[in-house]
Length: 323
Image (cartoon, rainbow, N blue to C red; front, side, top):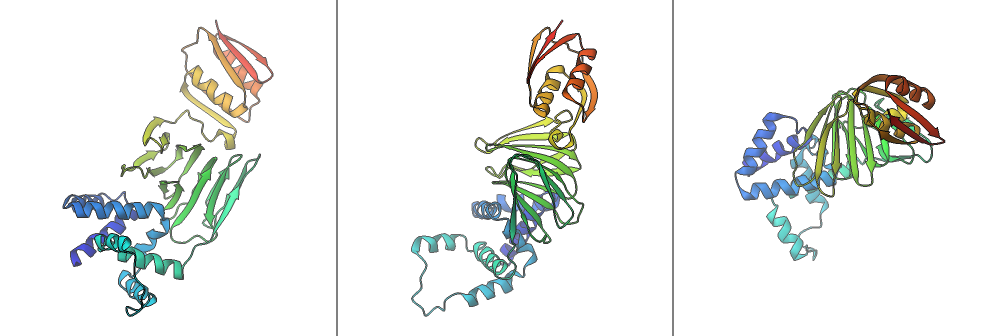
């Protein structure tokens, strides 16, 4: 039992810090030692992903937590009994579940976290968190955030698009998106939710993305990288995000580095809410340019001066024809 508890404590630390290679190796060895260890790991990982509050485990005195939980339960001489099916499940998970239950009970008894909701309609808005992190919300977006920041900084992205500028801190900042999560210490990145699909691009620093799908390993992203993730199929596509301009909706800036014309047009369409059709011979020349708070007409003038093209605009529809 002592060995099992040691492994449990290692597991808690690993789930709190999956980037630690020493912990990861120890946990992998423990999982591979027996089918029972693998089953216990999968159960605990699922509970962990479903409730971020469980990460308080590594800060609790688990033995004292179990004692307090036992004192709060009905005495043995009462007629209270667990349903047989639930009792069998608890017996199979005897190593891990009592510790989880005790810690969860103590946490919610003594330190419940209160969350607020921030939602936008037809306008961009922002909020500054207690730790001085800043979150910008695009139109029709929604998230939940703690009223008071504890040692662990966790917010829940529920809808839309948001840009995060995270204040550096020794405690990780976590963004939960359904079963997926992003962990950072101090960086800036953009999240876009399109239905159930998740798009993430990193502007500065580094983040860790965990999909929560079938024990898929984490993905590390640095500045200039991005991912598209579909939680329904479990497919994850990593891409070069240098020309993504994912945060243009808040910065009103388009930066292109060796970008093909077709890619430039997609970003112009998104920022200026227009429709662009490319016709004729498409130039292969790459664009290197920065547009900051420019009018659409100014951007089109630059494109026409750079490429052998003609540009015709009818309200929100633009036709670009290669010569």
